[in-house]
Amino acid sequence: MNRFRFARAHSPDAAVATVAADPHAAYIAGGTNILDLMKDYAVAPALLVDITALSFGKVESTPLGVRVGALAKMSDVADHPTIQKQFPAIAQALLESASPQLRNMATIGGNLMQRTRCAYFRDVGTACNKRMPGAGCSALEGVNRMHAVLGGSEHCICVHASDLAVALTAFDAIVHVHGPDGDRAIPLTQFYVLPGTTPDRETVLRHGELIEMLELRPSEYTARSTYLKVRDRAAYEFALVSVAAGLDVQAGKIRTARLALGGVAPIPWRAREAEDALAGQAPTRDAFVNAGQIALSGAHGHGENDFKIALAQRAIVRAFETVASA
Image (cartoon, rainbow, N blue to C red; front, side, top):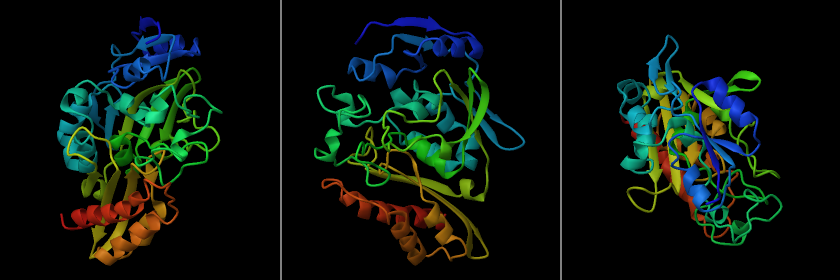
């Protein structure tokens, strides 16, 4: 681990000013991701600014829905009665993440900002465009069983690591941030950036901007939702494929569907064409099979991860059938 300086912020403005003033500064809260990366020499911030003293740890109901503070612990949000009742897929996604010990330490904002778990990104002895732009992508011709089949590029085929972000993407969560230029509200569907030719850029955040909270708006499809995670072992494992699915069914027809995928793309993958195809249909297996085919119609495997395409299609069917039978 490289040497670094440490500071503790006691107000959002102080935190933002400190990080914005140093291009090599970063925020730290639970530290469950950034410290691992520093130990692997994958990242080397010169200054860490501790934000745990800030008052962003609450889950609050509002007239429009629910606000989740960026410093709320993953375990606390998963156990919150409002989240469990109005957003069961979000509660499930949190409980499927990491281990109990990590969930007790990790924060919601940190979970959204976690970096990819690609082994080549973390191994400084290999080529990685995300870690060192222009170096190349070792995964393209290497061990790529865990890598993306959607949304990748010739520069990067990593997958996004967050389970929570998949569920939040399905349900149109809004990220509220505070930065040097003021406040912004960013739909999560616009928060993450596909790798393209700049895989080192992962979000639309500007340097110094700080996540303060998430805004969630309940609906029939958030209350009637599920999160399905397919992985190599039952606990403490990242997704091969995951599905966040929600349905609003009225008079035997699907009024609104929501679908997002994890483990298959460099960002949480919203399958809007599949959602549109389900609208107006009866909630049947045939309709869900068609939705799965549409959602993966642009998928491309890289050898070892070809199986993810069929696996994702089947997981979509299973998730929607679970919701429809609820």
